[in-house]
Image 1: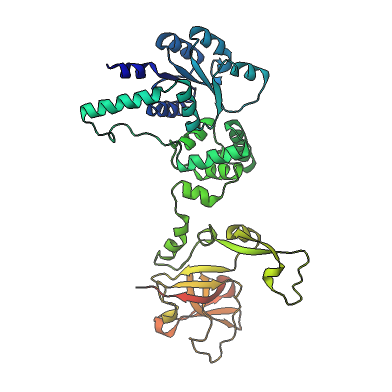
Image 2: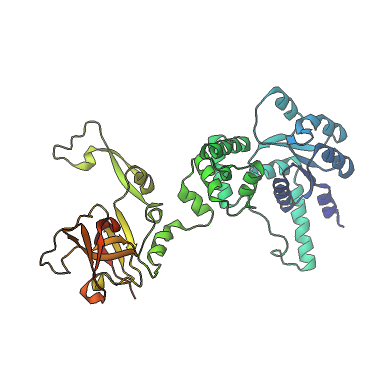
Length: 409
């Protein structure tokens, strides 16, 4: 072993935390920074490893199964006066005991930790051990002809979802404890245990060990951290902006409506907020009456006033609309227009085409009301289908077709 490699071997960092996933993730990061990493989950293990291995630094969690990390700071300093101690805590109360303990430590960081901050503190405290290791690693690679891209991959600071959560927690001043507590409250409020997020689960989501959290847990995080659903979808790798187009392209045997959330989610409209002295009864420029413009997601407006427009894909087996709305075409339906007017001698090209729920399923068809409380469904003459007569309570007229986009095929 060279002198440089010997220096690196002395730069040992002990990671102490009772959460195995959090501890392992941080230990792996420490190793990637160029230090030798050791792990401990209790105070007893910590003291034993310090006596036996003589690490250069300890990343010490406050809350451990057999006591507080603060309580052993004095013992650690007596065992190894030069030991660098960085405290990791989920929530800083700034009470007397914590403040007294910190005076024995090099510093502290709060969870969810900023790995860049921890690395900077370690590098500064250990006076360039990382730089010496990198130089030694370079010499070793050149001597052995190894490919620096091979070997164990280095983790990024956080995965996209973890970075989103960490940023939001910092902005709101929340620690792990508060997020867990709020998730428990939401779980009770909604009678849904899946909305609860444990401390270790939160750490796993942030570290990326859990790559696709359940919907209930994502809803909890969105509510607690004031996050936009579109941002969370993007962070977990979804592409919500493509969902609407993809669902419109999905052909099926039966006619079907595109779900409401696929149409509205992640779509925004621009709404004006008028000045207090604006008078719309008088003719004036709108821009001069507007105090400011706001972009509001359609999804939230839909909760106040359900949208009356919907999108429908005509099924491969539904030929009732004939050449005007053939199978595979996409329809825009206005649900406010659901009243059937007398047809008289109007041609099929001038009559209203309706989106209708029948006992056999959804279809797009022409409709006539009969005087004996019956309803007549009339397929287009070119469809090859026969007319059908139903009681009025057997058929629901959902809306009128107001637009058609024909399939490219």
